[in-house]
Length: 316
Image (cartoon, rainbow, N blue to C red; front, side, top):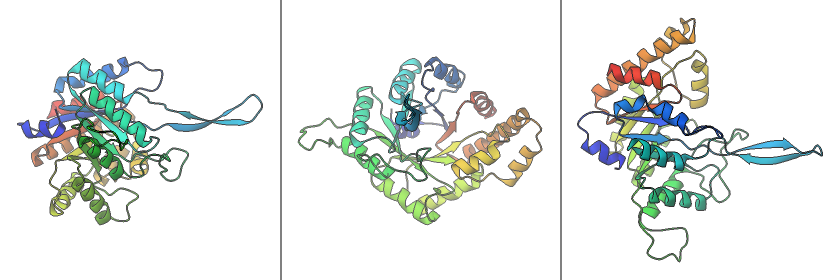
């Protein structure tokens, strides 16, 4: 089923999760061990992230260096198929611009269509670790809006080969990212919102937000979207804080604010175990408020902490 169909048929707030592909060399069993306790809550769908390749320099025997490409977390398409088969649940693969050509993207979409995957989340993706700014593949997309258009084209039976006649029309439900606190590269919130509106006008079916820790930022974001005529579902993305280190890592990496009340409670903690307890209570509080607000889905970035997510959902 499509994400929008799940939402339309729901009688209560839905639950969904987001997982990382295992590092290269790890087994699919690590995914199952991560998801097994979460599946008791019957998620509507599970997002599987995609990570671009990285470049490293390896020293040759003669002392010179060779630039090599390494993909540390391969297998998103295969993981989606495995998760769908193992749990009988819909999977939502992430598609990113960075590190992929248009041809590679089309081939991935063809594979996903063959597998019966009905949903994709299209993202620009982050800059490579060795780059200051995002640089697209020479034959790829620079912006998520361009990637979105490629998926829309395939939904209309239009492939990259112009002479390909009667191409099968795919039926992907397309999600895009929204930023309640503004994408860090946008000059201002209004400009960022205009980009989001354009993506919806060009075919996006729903929005999933970047993580946030102040629900008012989400409420304000939804209000602005509705004022601009954006009517698609807006799914809040939630992440637990489980260590003091995250107080600096998350704002620096994801450009989000952590409320003073929350950070003060974390700073009182002497151990990460205490931080996890505080973070769990905050996640529960956020979830309850958002559920009362009437959000269509509570989307949890699980990222190695299924036990915390389980406690939060049990509290609901």
